[in-house]
Length: 336
Image (tube, rainbow, N blue to C red):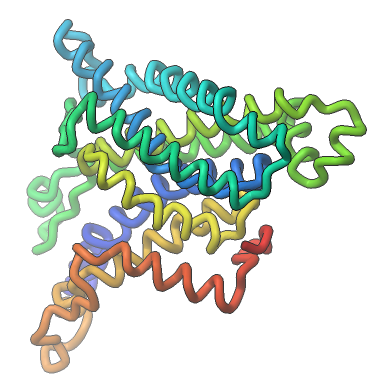
């Protein structure tokens, strides 16, 4: 019985949160790796673009809620996601046309694009704070739990209850659908194959008649969709706060680099590596080990390696280790 309680406690506090968080990081890291693989620079405005997309969804969600439009047990924000994607796509395409295209025409070095993206990041950051402020914003509605801890305990007779939030279930299902659509697009459609060819060898792709501006525009559109969905799922699971999305830049970049920059599969794997590492290091293991070990060996302390406030330090340490010892990442992407 204690072993089952240990499994339930482990699922409740480590496995389920890490899978949901890893799905959010994977979607964000896919955007980073697409921009790096095709546009060939590290976009430091990624986190604030995610904040802008989420902000757009929140505004539309509040509008729907004021008119009594809802999805019943599901969050109304799911209805607003297409509007958020459209707003984010318009923002990144306008930014590309007015800013990045100039530097592409100049054949500027990647470091120039990185510096420019930092400037864009500050503009986006100011824009989201001006519209929606810097405080936490909650926009989740509908049923809160798929599985309730109290009902689980009553039905199983276990001392530990398993709780799975609706937002966690939606996160995993949505991430699977989005990733499947992305891989189908990249592998089965003519535009997707053009993007892969452009990423592998730009000069050869141009000689074969691929339109580089079209590839760039489609890349931004896909990135806008990915990071809006990732940002909304994260906001539904936790809350929306512009500074938090800025901080997410570190674990998202770490996910893309750990998996291998330019590798979509690597971005997904990296997202889960970072998520499980952060959750495992910041979790207090006393309860799980108290169930799993004999009473004489049960720990007295919390066995928490690091406070939750410092969880992003885990991403930083993993990032440094990967850059030092395996800069191409787990899936042998492009070295940094």
